Length: 503
Image (spheres, rainbow, N blue to C red):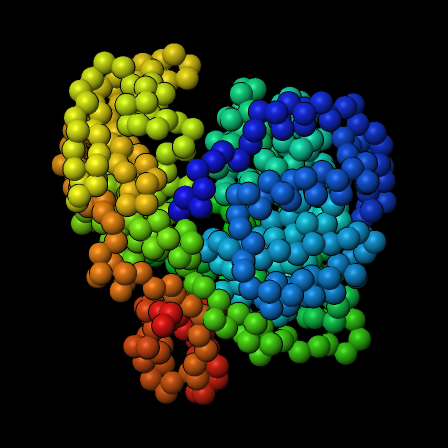
């Protein structure tokens, strides 16, 4: 949460980008060999990808692990060398994000998260993920999407970055970002890859696996791993009395139906590893990810049960019983069990004002009640009343500004589906707000990052393995490709993944 208080797009950047979109020209697609109209030439793809890469790194940090970055980069370049666009200067980046995700930018920029790495079983599976994303680049799917965006009034760079955010944050996140353009961009214009493009990327991924001597059937295993992620999320939601999440990110663009899986099986069956098949690379892959952070990172804050702990910012907050914590790069959301109300914690940018009074004034607070408070020894101001937004519209609003121990001002904003929900949840919202604090000694003991470790699979199975892990048996099964499996366990003594607290 809150690596920095910022917005992804700047108006000047977007205005400049809008000038880049012309009528387009005819380009020969490197995969199909057919001519197609495009707002990007083959050369422009590289330049737009380079600029968009800088924007992605403002939103997501690259993982600070040179050895793992080098491992993924070497694997990616090996696959790219066998692709339809081997001449590109390819770039492969592991992002410091717990999301299970991978995406691509035009011009040869490929991203995988540490979140998706944790759930891969071997090098060949990771090659399937990377090969799929390489397929999007070689077939110019990003350039095709940018061309479609032209009707929405988006420039090439804006469309390119929005497309990347669509893949990395889901449709809702990309649409929120599109709203910052202030051009009336409808959600339908923030185009995802089409089903045909996804199928083509699957086929190309399998083909690139074959060309690099991996078994192309690993494309099937990758989709199955992600199907298991979907099932796990649904099972967890059901157990907690919540609706199953619809999801975003990598799996959202890979329909999890049997017809799709069968199509992948059929295509993979027609290919075979070129020459003598290579080992799937389980041992080197596990060695590469050993010690990697799992789940939230200390730099973004840690969710530990009902507690949110951020050692770098020296802040903590505890959710009421039954409420859920959702941590993202720029805010923490505390959500009610019925998902009809939430408390949103955000860092206030320095430009918003040097005092609580100035911040409230810039925020648009008008008629209402302002009250000075102390929250666990921290200076705070609570406002409840009318707020005028940037469009001049008035609405009821409630928030509290509080000074952190390191001088940063935070906003705790009350949100609800309607006035009735706000009234019903007000006591719990106030409870969550009242828990905001500087880290205590107990908080600091709990605020330890979790890491991937390797252990021999015990005779007692996953139940025994869970005794030495900070995550439960179901999560360990998911982590090791055994969630919902028809049967079978790792062999006793085989190295498997567990999650442990850092020393």
